[in-house]
Each structure stands twice: as C-alpha cells, then as structure tokens.
Image 1 (cartoon, rainbow, N blue to C red):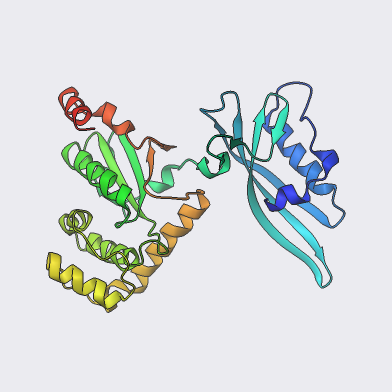
Image 2 (cartoon, one colour):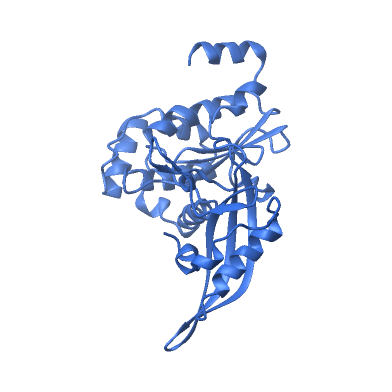
Length: 289
C-alpha cells in the first residue's frame, strides 16, 4: 500500500462530494486525508494528470503529487511523492483490481509526454517537423522490443515527413544484464551517426545474461564488426544520457518495455502509427499480423 493510503484516516475515505468529482475535489480530498494525521504537515498537492480508463468505463485515474513534512524525533523530514487515485462520479478508490487476472490497475497507468521529449538528441529517424511524433522507451534485448521497435524504425525511415521517432533507453538489467552495455553502445553509435548499426543490434542475437561488459563488446565486434571499447561507451556524456533516460522513465511511471507514445499519449497497442501509413502498407501490415 502506498504512503498516502497508509496515512489517510478511515474518516477521510468518504465520498468526494454530492456531485461528480472535480480536480479541485480530488486535491481537497488528499489534503484532508493527509492533514488528519497530526504528525504530517501538507505543503502542496497537485494533480499531474487525469487519465480516463477504457475499462472499467466511467472511471478516471488521477495521478497526484504531494509534498509533505513528517515529524521525526530529530526534526521534520520533507518528502515529495506520487500516487494514483481512481475516481468515478463521487467515489474514490485507492486501487482497482481485475478480479479475473488479479492485476492492479495502477500497474497500467503511464503518464503522457510533453514537447520536451521531442529533442534532437533523441530523434533517431524521421524529420523533427513530421506530422506525427512517436516516442519509444526500449530495451535492445527485450523480446517485445525486438518485435516492435524495428517496425517503428522502418516506418519513420520510409515516411520521414509523417513520423518523427524519438528513442529513449530503458534497459531492464534484472532480466537482461547485457542490455546495459548495449544501450550505452547505441548512445555512442547514434552520436557517430551509425544508425544502421543500431538497427542491426535489434536483429542480432546476443547472450542476454552476460554481465561482463568486455564480453558483451567482444560479441558485438564478432557479430557486427563494431570495435567499441569500455572507455568509449563509458564516457560521462554516454552514461549521463542513459541515466537521464531511465530517470525520465521513472517520472512517467513506465514499468516495462517497449513503452510507446503516439502524439504525446501512451499507446498501449503500440500500433496507432499503422493507421497513418499509406493504404497499401496498412493492408500489408494487417496481413502479417
């Protein structure tokens, strides 16, 4: 259970209002609940985003950010945290769980991206003034990424005025340790303009369990002829970009890869771009599903 819901008193967990809840109602509800604890001082509560749910219909997820001070023996401890509330009409719930799958709806909530994500450092294919913007957070050794991302590469390369593809890194080290040095290699290669090599990495099998960075680079050399050194891929600017991408993924509440955004909104289907392809290509893609 999240910090906020541990702190909310039973008396605070009431209906929001006599009519359908507004953003202001949600903020007041959180403030009231947190303030009911005498050891808490509430400094600020904001709704970051309201996300309508496809299922169950009629419910909205409110992503809330709150700054509080906790009384401690040694003084006040300040902290800023986020949480998600589910609201329908005048009612609020800390979570919604699918009774058939036992899956929490919180795990499905991902924040939208703003225009700051459309920067030249992350543009990998397409023109920056393309009609549609695609943002992807990817792990080069994730099986699902290796299905989805090459198709995004192809679409943006072939239709640069239709799609601009912005690539962000989110290697899942716990599942594929080798993805971390490969992600750093991709950052380095992109800076050198070697985008063809990046595409090849997605089509080449690697020992995803390898933890030794030198061995991962040796495999990269053996299979693709890319002679990269640990020194090259561990330059401060490379490591900084990787860490910043991962920080942004956490801020967006991304929990897995590939996470795809189409025109700023989370695309859980990862296929919204297909409807903007030429008609003949749409049919080809449909036939190969």
